[in-house]
Structure formats: structure tokens, C-alpha cells
Image (cartoon, rainbow, N blue to C red):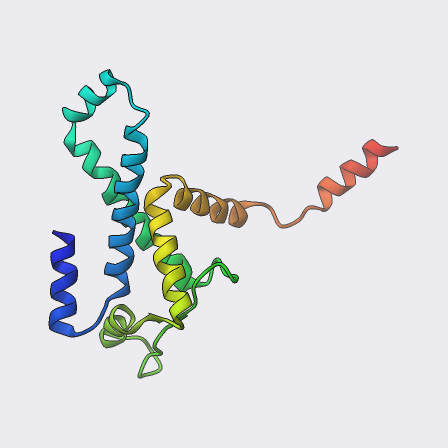
Length: 163
């Protein structure tokens, strides 16, 4: 179903939307992860899995959602470095963003180079393959924003305990 939507959006708009590409790579990563885990599942667990197809199919969907969250993290610049992709992001036509700008963000945001495209597809796959990867990034960001910035109290107690 998602592949059909991806193909139709490409066919009618003649654009490869990065959101769909990332979502599809996340779904594929989720399916590969399931295949890797099935090798180690006992017969009893296999019987349980066959009775809960919804749960089995939900894992790749989560992978696609995590890939979209990771895409937003990349676009925001919250993580950066040589391992992560860079993107061209269009600027608003007016001083303030409007609906046309939001559509441009979805349809005209592209990796800067071929290497950045490969990095994006790789990390989208990883987001689907490793269930904990994106939640750990989110936890690290939340933790870094909620930690107290004043650490002088800690340093003072360390000096006191050293005496």
C-alpha cells in the first residue's frame, strides 16, 4: 500500500518525496529486523506470532514512523556530523512561512549530494531495523534539555569531600 502511494506521488508530481523514501526504508528495516529475529524464535513463540499478525505488521510501521522522526531530527540540525546527511531546505517566499512554504518543505527538500542521499537512506533503514535507535536519540535530547545547567553545586560538594 505504501509503495503504491510512493509510486503515485512520484508519477503525478515527478518528484521523489524524501518523506516517502525515508518511510519506505524504515519499513524495510523493520521487516529485515523481523526476519533476523525469527531465526532465534522457539516453536511456541512462532505459534504465538502466527496468531497475532497485527503485532508482526506493526513493527515495520513503527520502523517507518521512526524513520520520519529521524528525518525531522536531521532537518532540525539536532544531530550533525560527517555520518549524517545534509539537506537543501527551501526558504519561505515571504518573511513568514505560509501554506505554500509548508508544501515546499515536503516536496522540495532534498539531500545536498548523492552521499547525503545514501546516508539518509541508510539511517532511515537503521531507524526501522533497530527499534531502540530513535527512542534513544529522543531520550538523549530530552535528558540534555532537562539537566540543570548550573553544576557549581556539584563541584562544590566534590571539593568539600576531597578535604
